[in-house]
Image (cartoon, rainbow, N blue to C red; front, side):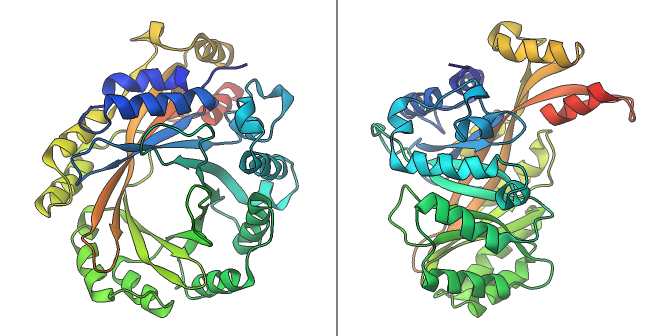
Length: 377
């Protein structure tokens, strides 16, 4: 049995404020972490306007860190899910999906970049915690809807409903130039006969008009006013909608910053201050989020790092420094017609490396792939 995610999560624990995640909730998250492999990317979902310090848990599976091999059930993966998970029908279907994803030349292998589990944690865990399941497409993916159909047929054990599929296709075809589906969600943990579609490339002012075209049953002007409160303090927005036989009322607007491993305290501070002003974020939670940002590296605290991780670095590059980066992935505004809006923060916990970039003659954050490329130069 290889290392579990708990071997990594213990490095996050000192930086998780009880204003965001209560000790009881953290205990439940740690139970989940012991069931999961030591993935390079995980995180937490926290509600910003609610005094209750509750959080959900996210686990990202990637090809490069070996976690895809774990999901596929490969014997050489070094970690196995507990038997109680392996015996459950949902995990068995996810294994069949991952076997296709792990096979070179298949549609799933070519089009899907990574997989994300999202566990809803509202109290003590059930014997078999079942996550919502998200797949992210490769940036140059060209057959997104076909990939989605094949993936969801494997995950659900049956083809998509023709009615749902027709509505999904209509939503994709209504996208303006430059916008695309970047992720699809299957809600195993919730009663929902449909999918979640996540879009990038929609301009802030185009989001309400797009929703009106696809039959969203809300008031575009109300949503436009909400978006206007954050669009000038976000570097890009993403739209998430739930699609069944129709487009459902609840929508999410993700506020994102430019991609990068470094913590961007100033930019997030500006957005969080706006949310506090609008009553969407409690000041105590704003402060806890900003305190989360930073990183921990192995040269400062070698005793905290799993030996297997340190050994990997020594094998590939003696100068590489194992690092855990604490980021805010994004902040989501959730809008449901007739209800007050809600803000959620998604905290990222990323295992990375500080590596020397020979071309730029400086050190920078990078993932395992960058470390291996540096070694080959």
